Every structure is written in C-alpha cells, then in structure tokens.
Length: 202
Ligand code: URA
Image (tube, rainbow, N blue to C red; front, top):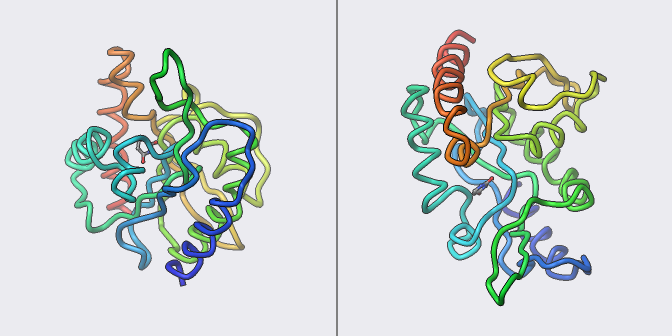
C-alpha cells in the first residue's frame, strides 16, 4: 500500500512548481518497519545524503539517529522513519547548494502523505524530531491543543488522535540541534532514555 502511494507521490512531486529551490527529482519516503512499529520517527526533510540514497536518515544524520536509538535501547528494525517534507529543500549561496528549513507551505503540502503513513503504519508512539514535525503531526490530530514548541514539549508524551486512533506523541529535539547547541545534548539524551522506557511500558 505504501509503495504504490509513494510512487504516485514521486510523480506528483516531480511536477510541483514551488517557486523555491528544492530537489524535486529525488524524493525520500518512509523506511523501516511498516507493521505497527513501536515508534515512528518523523524528521524535518531529507538532506543531501538522503536525496542521493533515497532513504531517510542516512550518512551523518543516520549515525545520529542510530546513536539516539542506542540510548533509547531500541533497535532500528523496530521503528519506522519518515520526514514531514519528502524532498530536499535547498538554498544557493556563493554557488554552494545547502539545506534549508522547509517553508510552512511545503510542510502543508506533505501533510496528506504523512497522514497516510501514520494511518497505514499504525505506530504506538510518534517521536517528532524538532519543531517542524511537531507542528506537522499536531496539525493532523483531531484533538485541538494550544500552540506548542519543542522547547516546551520535549520529553513529555501526550495523546493525540489521528484517523480515530489514539497515538502517543513524544516530542524530541532534532539531533542536529544538539550539535549546534551543546547545552541541548544532555537534554536530548535524557529524553531518549525516557522515550525508550515509555515505549517499552506500553
Ligand atoms: N534530517 C532530517 O530531518 N531528516 C533526514 O532524513 C535527514 C536529516
């Protein structure tokens, strides 16, 4: 089911006219255990390595995710990994192409597929990595809540309802933010230990 939908989405994305730089020819879709995994990780958007390989969280970001899973005591084979936006948003400066944060319109454009992934995969827990996926997943929830950011919500699970199903939302900082801001590293590590304990307790 996912495979067919991903092929349709690749076709749709290749025809998008965004008016912004983005790698629309190399979309990256979800990967991992698609059968009721313990945890679905939702990141921001693919980077260069992901666009080149067609898989989320490979290269440097993949090593960070593996280290996060090791702290949580959870095997990557038990999780499903995807992104809010399925193509690499880029910017060009001094003729160098680099990643940029997805625009709200790009996140909105990816919501239908993210909903499909959540409803098809049926995870017990959704762990969001940073503010972009936190707000994307909360936009899909049937339950209304006040505006949240990862600084307020990290490490604290709440229940959301997506497609009539209760899911535990567990917000985390994005692993890259713990590299730019060293003070966040112990916070993220503590949250990961909590995430592992929480998921195993369900
Ligand atoms: N960062 C993300 O948010 N997603 C990826 O797939 C890679 C890096």
